[in-house]
Length: 294
Image 1: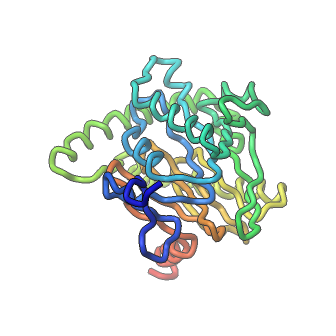
Image 2: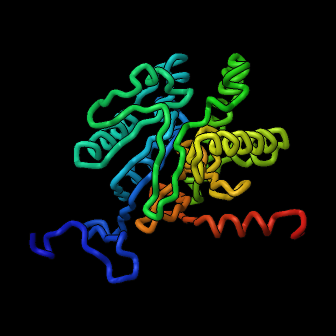
């Protein structure tokens, strides 16, 4: 194909994984592996515009869908499946058809898919968990994480009540951001702001991280990649790498592995890449907020 006809052309910079779309003048990115979770398709809170844009402008050799891709809990209450949610599924299946290795690890909201463990549909393998080895030889246990949430396992009724309240909060989120959009202000998650300010929620996140580290050691891996709690993160806890792929309800975030094996958390909106943070950057931020540094 003639260079002038190619829709994507490599940029003249130091990043070989970045190309430019000649039609839109926007950058597209190529990674070794992408991890996305908690898209909650089928719920009104799903940020489908940002997610569709992310899928369009990011390619990878291997794609992990780390649970809660479809929100079966919400669909049981009330059917909600607009065309953009269907478009997301179609684009993910298209990636599988075009050669991307796609592994789907169900979570608690899409637990119906667990009855198909070990099977492949449309080139998408369904698995309860997986061991992923990065380009630099780091072994990660990839799992959604709901099996290690005490509320989900031992007080399921409370989880449903919490999910109902969370849904109402996301509705408030949506109206708030419709107003912000009218004033050309970026998306802001009121629900995530509250979650990180409430002491009990912060304690829950810390407890979840601790149990994930303990279970990762049992699997004899160097790190864990999970979802479930809607908080994107990369950090080291007790010599184990804890990485969370975030969500597409509050933060529109994903986890990516570059071709050198390094992981990054990236944040995306309808216009493209917002920011990205490596393990070193996020660890430095955490250190700056530690009590000893205040």
